[in-house]
Length: 479
Image 1: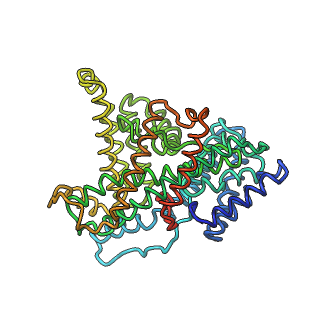
Image 2: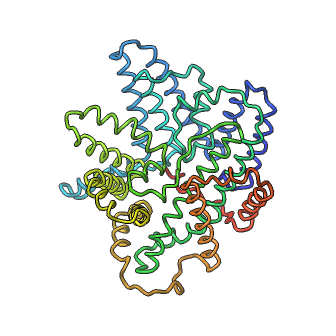
Image 3: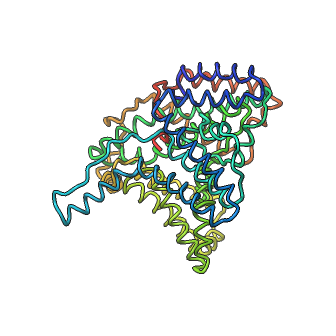
């Protein structure tokens, strides 16, 4: 049941009627039933599994909190970490580990190898596992309380808008919001609708056009050189941004329909002036989670290393972020690249500031953003490529056999698709640029109702007329 389908629209309409007609004290239960039905639509097995994970973490949280002495809490906390991290490794990385073990064995004992395990990765496992880990860490540290009500805890983990691709919500902020009683708020409701259609615009009008190009070229990368590779190198940035931020906008918008506010995952990352700033604006909840539970922990344990603790912490943290995205050496390289780039910025900050002080500040901003854009595009080659070999081929053939024409290449997009996608990208960039300048369009239109509703209806019509309603999955569903 993809967010852009008719059946999901019917699902939301029915759910809203039930939610606001039910007793206020039962609203959380309606959401739990809806989330159960939503995941059950994909797979009953996945549903049973996530309820098992929820129940185990619920009771572990209660047991950890009951132990007053830290030494008695630690074994339960350790059990929780082993179970949560262990199931993530098993489902997402076991075959990658087997593949590398077989490669190693092949050097010493040719013909000896482990058998691969036929597995289907549970939907949303990376997201709800991190939520469970963060929940147990907070209880163990004493900075959070264990949830007494199993139903509220289940609703927190299972809440359907965030289940498939985040945001990664913290229990301390999200659980209390589930316990409130919500009256229908027309302002928040309509704000949610607009955010949903803005997300659908990004996804259906832009991302689902560009995905054809991305899939064709990365699926047959060795058949292309030059212009097609350069085209996908640039456009893949807008594809992933519109796809992932589009999902986030839809998820946040759905939350608002029910009076709930999810955490924003994007703050105009394409206008970041360095890689460190980029990761404070891109996939924010993952970055903050890793900062709080990995990076800060490393700093604390390696204080005697002084500045090298931060260098080590950054590299390990982003290595984990890379591995979180998937199993494969390309994802390890993806994470390592971020760690190297941020450490480079750390050591060269003074010299870069001295150089920037001698230049026009507007050109500094412009070139800084271009450099970050190119670096991100370079990183995405390892994200999108099916193997490290394909990624290296694309990078080394970007400028090979250049013919400055777009016609004659089978890249899956018509001229009309290029025009629509390009126009959409310009609109998104303009919107982000105005927000970056502190110009919030919706606030500016408050006293101009005719213009406001013309733009809103224009947005809806644009999605309905130019959207590609082919039920294409969001990219981050795979994680």
